[in-house]
Length: 231
Image 1 (cartoon, one colour):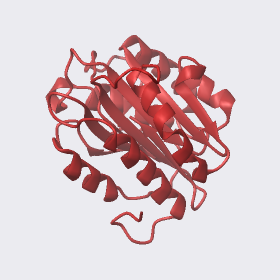
Image 2 (cartoon, one colour; image 1 turned 180 degrees about the vertical axis):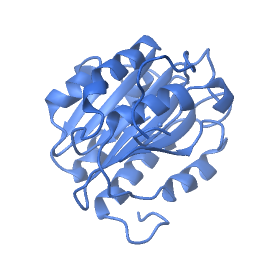
Image 3 (cartoon, helix red, strand yellow; image 1 turned 60 degrees about the horizontal axis):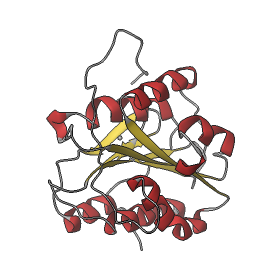
Image 4 (tube, helix red, strand yellow; image 1 turned 120 degrees about the vertical axis):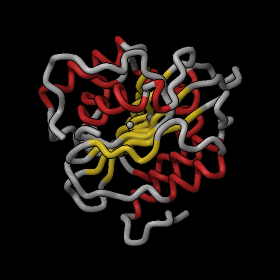
């Protein structure tokens, strides 16, 4: 299925379609699952917040309008923006609901790389779970630094394999085994673009130097005195 934005790489359309497949399997409403989207390239670009779309149809339409950016990969910025701006009660975050980031990426970080371990630690300390999906150059060594365990990351050699893991990803997002029913979560999808044409990165799950989108909750919406990723 093609997005509503013309001239985008085929791989980007595949990523958007995969994200929509995951969204389509959960109940979208202010009292159930909420979704936000953030892109991370040279910096983070918030596409919409958790409380911007309260129905599934309008949310899926919004995903079709998310535009590809041929930029670097600032994973640190994407996580920072998601933690501070997306999982924020002012933007729809619900403190009583678990926050999950679904991160899709086809490359390794190229900006604010030295700050990534510290940001990943802050995301975990805030009680936010990351489900990471890496494609191509996003190797397993990198994915292991992002996800808490092997249960929460997936590595694929090509984009066409994304459709094969949708159900497994949903189970990881909900933190359940296949026989259990999906639980209510706030999910943010994070998408990253690389400098290489036709390659894109997307993460589920969140403005600072990355892109991310999904629904999640932030237990710490304040910034600290440490240096933040460059905008």
